[in-house]
Length: 252
Image (cartoon, rainbow, N blue to C red; front, side, top):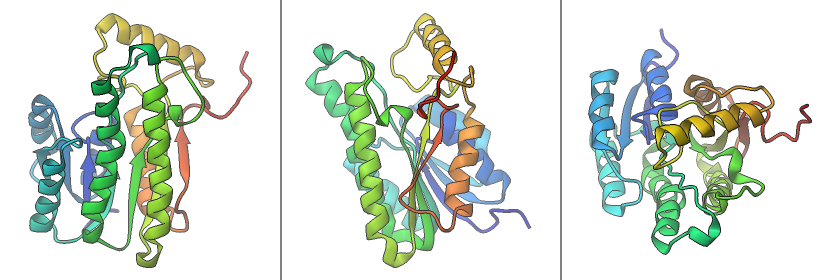
């Protein structure tokens, strides 16, 4: 018997990067998954890559009708689920003087509002004793130029996770947060970068991360699935997967 045989999971933002790595690991372990993504090209690519046991749908975490449609899909296909991974997110790097109302709203609509209402709509389908893991960021603490809005949206996400953890205790549903640092994904987690900007961002990440490298989506996926299924006495916690970046380490 494989580790996740009989398990059913939903992964938002699961068509590339960290979410895709989580989906692959679950499928390899015998689970069935519903995966969402906003980019039609990524959705089609994920359908081909993940195969028949994955139901991949286009869904925008910032759109309430899409969130309601996702809940309807869960009800129809699974009826009950064991695990929800809230991974859909967006990072727009702008100095606070350059932030517009539309970019501010988009960041909070995806990272915070969308996360909240996805959990609200899917919680009724999570089995007693199930789990939720939310993807935050090493940037959810402290201050970094160009990341004020993004950081605030992720700090709010952490606060939401604590509230969910408290309110879902009667159903024994655990809610935890994984907080990645620099992870080598196709977009590097940032919207709108050119190839040269992405390369420069990657160089910065390698330089300032104490372990002197980027993490992989698979390394984050291992942490996500640990929180989801193995950490059975853990709720309301944050697990950092950041190569030491957010841990106050002194590095020469």
